Length: 246
Image (cartoon, rainbow, N blue to C red; front, top):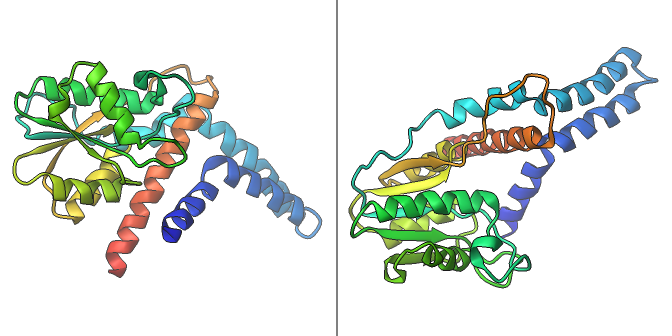
């Protein structure tokens, strides 16, 4: 558990806003000692933030991740695993409204695939975290509201991250192809984990964020897209380091 939170903490510090703030603070610290370095760092922070907040900048980071896998095209599957994201049980008493937008996008695609695949199971994941109920249970209630027979739903209530989701799936499903539904940018890292565990899965991307738009459009949404892409690159790097050191 401690290792999990250390990993999350380090990852949070390496995301755009903390890095840009660090560059500015480092620039102020070096301004009198090394004026050129200090000025360069002071300029680098805002410029980096501006680039990551732009449509071209966020798309350049996200497109290589989102274009690795094509959407599900009707391939036969025995089960569909929807990777969890998050919810807030204080928002509403309706599970579909409690889900964050990314979680709802993933669930909608999972439901679409299950409904088009007779006899398949819908596997939903996510631990309780800071909420009163496990995320997987909220997803299950939402799936039932969207028309899925409860008897076809399985949950992984204690999975805190993608690695634990992959491990849980390996124990729950024996035989048959499993479609893994997640955000398109997240799937490359998820597939790396499943491959390392020897679980044969089919990628089913959704929640595409790398959109085209005006080059002069700078927004918090673009910054969030860049942040999620950088988080995935850091996660892939961590997986490769672990694999090398193992």
